[in-house]
Image (cartoon, rainbow, N blue to C red; front, side, top):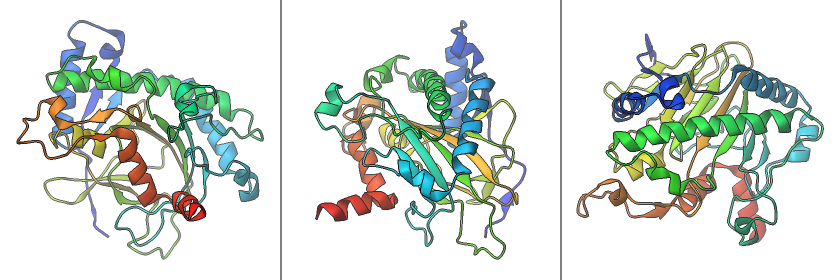
Amino acid sequence: MSASVAPATLPIIDIAGLRAGHPGALERAAAEIHAACTGPGFFYIRGHGVHEGVIAAAVDAARAFFALPEDTKRQVAANRLHRGWHAMGGALMEGARHTDRKEFFSIGLELPESDAAVRAGEPLRGPNQWPAFVPAMQPAFADYFREIGLAGAALLSAVAASLGLPPDFFAASYRKPLQRTQAIYYPPRPEGAGEDEFGVAPHTDFGCLTLLWQDANGGLQVRERQSGGWIDAPPLPGTLVVNVGDLLGRWSNDRFASTPHRVINRSGRERFSIATFYDPDFGAMVDPRALGAAEGEARYEPVTAGQHILNRFDQAFGYRKRLAAAQV
């Protein structure tokens, strides 16, 4: 297995002024984010506005959930909306030989059955599956989902400014975002595990921006673009890790880097994280020309955000394959 390059060299960006609307803060954040997104594609943020108490409540609820027997968790097994519990072995990254050694619980934007998008049958839309057997899960993760979404929106305003666009450029594409928040559990890496076995195998994220909280056990590694080696992205108190996903890379015509990363839990302990994929509306059109690519220079054809994400889900997740087989 490739050795890590030490020390970690990912930038740390303070967005407290951006969140507070301080004069000049947008421009400063935009410049730093542009450098990070055209460089490593990963960076830390502090001053993000997600309260420590909200994080702690979500983590406590996740720990309680994952400690339960599989038969109990299976009561909220992942459905066609991608909501609920995804069992160990249910995710296979592109090019990987083994499924990821993780399980996770996923939520999205809470929409009632009466919502127009739900009534129209828009994929991935609807209510969440909340485990009644862990009553704290719903309030804790509803709070986390709301606060991390505000951090994501602030980051996108700086992303827009960094590309020479109005700060509210992305707002029209985020009226009902395909935001997904996942509590993730990684068991300790077993002794004798092969070099091709991972908590999460090397991959790039599917969507626009990912915002990650991770516990103190570490394990996240990022591919360094120049050397091709791996650098650690260790947990830093008070920060979140942010990275560019494939959809933003596509939208920016590859000006921003969607960087491969992986998780190897060598801590000898259970590892917990909370990942939020802050992605646009299902029908949002992702076209590099809208972000300034000239007609003859655009590397990608327009695609809706939802179709792009569905295509990647179909490739990666076992439950999608089972659903497809059941419809044949």
